Amino acid sequence: MIDTAQAPAVADVARRTTAVFETAKRSTDLIRRAWDPEKGTPVFTVDGTYTTRGWTEWTQGFQFGNAIYLFDATGDRAMLDYGRTQTVREMATHVSHTGVHDHGFNNVSTYGNLLRLMVEGTIEFNQWEAEFYRLALKTSAAAQGARWTALPGGLGYIHSFNGAHSLFSDTVRTLRVLALGHQLGHVLMAEQDEAVSLLTRLIQHAETTARYNVYYGTGRDTYDRRGRVVHESIFNTRNGAYRCPSTQQGYTPFSTWTRGHAWVLTGFAEELEWLNTRESSEIEAHLPEVAPAAGKLFESATTLEARLLEAACATADFYIDQTPTDGVPYWDTGAPGLAQMEDYTHRAADPFNGHEPVDSSAGAISAQGLLRLGRYLATHAARLESERLMDRSDAIADLGQRYVAAGLITANTLFDEPYLNRDPRHQGILLHSVYHRPNGWDRAPDADGVPRGESCMWGDYHLLELAVYLQRLAILEAAGAADSGTSSGKPYLTFFGIEL
Image 1 (cartoon, rainbow, N blue to C red):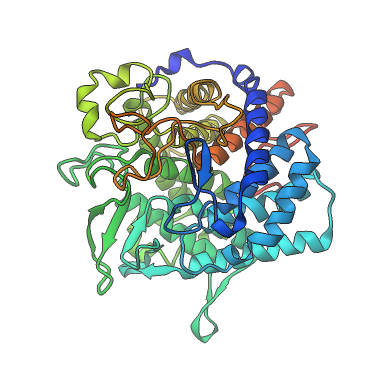
Image 2: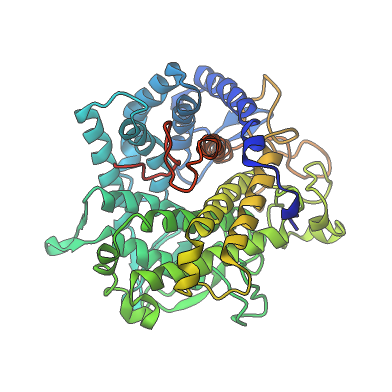
């Protein structure tokens, strides 16, 4: 369990980001010089060298997004030039890819970040270049939104690459591209020129995920524990009936694969931040289509907010309770070797143990979700309490501080050894990540068979994104502008920017 009473200050954690950026610069340069684009996309390291292996090309946006974030953090123009050039050269097929649920990973990390930097004024504004990024994001949002399985009563979901029957928890964070598409004024055009709202599909998918992939301790099944997340939900595509939980990368459907959990926690936190920037009337104009399935759940923008808060807080509480004291989770909360590690949640995680691997990438993703959710609660505590949107006995502001503390502890751990790579020959940034434990894809260097010491592209990206987030947050706090999200420098970091 994360001891949130021992959290460092934002400024203290932010000071460690310099080392993160140094490692990221070395890593990006190594990959840039050594990677052969004919191999596809780098996914994870083997003996410290990036290699490719995957079901889809879902990590290329992280490869170039790392360079863009390095420019964001350090002003290194060579990194900007590389990220910008490679986005134009390599990312077009990802924009129109109809076979994946990963648009919010690939395209927001590249086109989205470049457009954000332009509207922030960090890079020079060029109207046609901005329109190029906007068009890419609009097209990506429509392609993502078209990958749709409708459910009875007005709900539905963006189905995974496994097929129309499959709802992945991962996808809730890729909803960010639907948010951007809607924000940019776009819609999905379907048969007979039907204009399909991207915001409506975002809300539908978010509710379907909250309803079926997140547990609330209500006795849904024998293993129902509040805040637990299932990787995948399976539906009958003939009648839309929910059938069962499943998993592709976790240990069982009745345990929690921690990276899937991380996507849900951070995805809902980001969506709360984005929805708060929209007028209630705008949101409510897109609610009637989901109301038949949700009953009174979606009477207003306020009840939608309450629903997302319920899911986000449940997952945040579960993370704090089920994660070791330093904030780094093991790869699955039900992994069988954990039974041989007595009281493993009451001490720091051990990436060198002989039983089960940690997944540092799940920690890097979750830390950002905890920080964003905690800040959201602290900022809106008075309103949330007056509107009674959260059924909790503890004060909402205190709860927000608890989540922020957990995020800071996790970041502080990951920004140092043994997680931050110090080996100049190793191409990774964040060590001790896991890709696919059941398939045995991760390198285990010792006879115990436990993977360790390797990196993955999404872990590297999310550690770097976390570092940029905290760098900006520390500047805002120092300027006394953390509540407003503005200062004389760069604004609070969001995927949707200040005016895309």
